[in-house]
Length: 161
Image 1 (cartoon, rainbow, N blue to C red):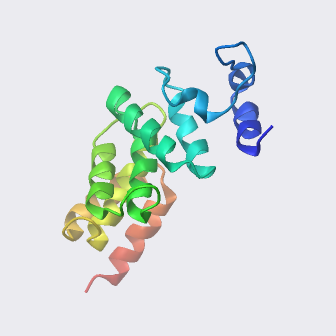
Image 2 (cartoon, one colour):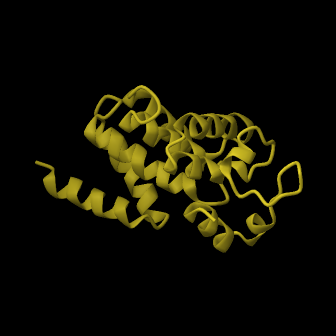
């Protein structure tokens, strides 16, 4: 069993019982590219990590379109930020983080989007630099328990003239 499939099976026992159309066990992300099940969003990560960036992008875009999935927004933003599997586009990456920052989700990925959006604002990455807005987003993420946001906010405050 590939490493990512084993990890998913350990973290999510239901994955161990996934079957393809012929009844065979299939933990491959390929079985989920065209799925209408939300679990597919997690498989976007597996597709990306195995180097199938086109499948990852397709999964993440579908998850964002169908469910406004913040997890997928974060991963797709990282692809745009690095230029892996898509043309490098910092504005698109920041737009996805902004969208995620304004979203509330049960899995708490929105707090990570708020942190990353705050950093983008502080550094002017893909958006004009806006330190006051950066502080607002970083403070909110820190209050929601994102330690990195609190650390970044502290460094930002200590660097202020």
